Image 1 (cartoon, rainbow, N blue to C red):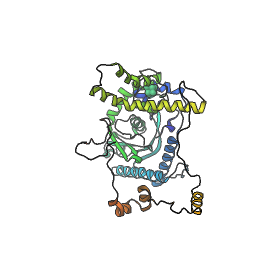
Image 2 (cartoon, rainbow, N blue to C red):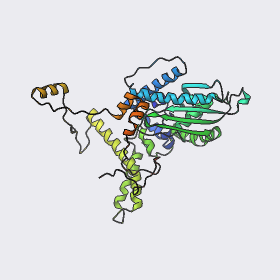
Image 3 (cartoon, rainbow, N blue to C red):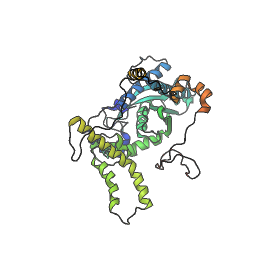
Image 4 (cartoon, helix red, strand yellow):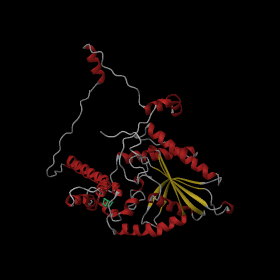
Length: 388
Ligand code: SF4
């Protein structure tokens, strides 16, 4: 679930990746306002709509939410989420006629993290009911909808999901004998349906040995600042010194011999460049916002108007005026886009009629970290676009 539901907990599940990697960030963040963004509001609208649709599909009472963020895309994406959830519920019914289904359930993991709680989009437990002995040990399912598409989120070893799992376990472990937890992140806008399973034994071991000590450090403001990709959602990221120091490490290459960088150094710089670019971009956006909104002046910089392109203010009036003056060759026709065409015809008809007329051009070759999930390509034997 998005961060807005966890706004009152400093040690929120959605921030766990950050505060587990950088425990003092939990306290440092508190001096910065928890500002919402259009992305967060859009995410909340998608969650509300998805919750409503899932409840309706399960014949539960629900009132359709309204939001200015609703769109055809949101409708389609929340349908995909609901479809996924219904399949999962169906699967759990194979072992149990009456599985427990919780939607938008508050999950309390404060046994491990002070004041820790979050909201599970969908929690399902079917088999393993202690009163039905023949049922065997059960699986607990935890599903989280992510509406964003900026970062692809994996369920594997995802601390947010593991915290939800701990909260869900504490709800059910009196009644059910649960052997493992299956976690799923549904991120339909980037076609990401990531799942991961862990045994309850391993989950509790992680909670005792890794989570609890980090949560203790975070709650006391202890531990070391540690910058990394987790800084992305930290409210202190623009002014954080640890992040600046880490990124400025690049400068050490200025003073080294020999005169030319070695291949190893270039590889190391590429590894840092992505984070460095994000950091520099964040500082620039932050400084610009203060200059515009609060009149803050930065030595050596000024505000100017960006370059723009001319545009017509009233296309109908332009066409009429041009026609009256004898200019008739003023229109260009263009086809609607693939997405619009697919929406117009529906996926099936679209593939039937136009499938053979659609191609996906090869992507531009890009150098990325080995951790990236895409398949490596051989540039010698494959034809790809190369930047000129
Ligand atoms: S910006 Fe990064 S290093 Fe700094 S407090 Fe936040 S998470 Fe820690």
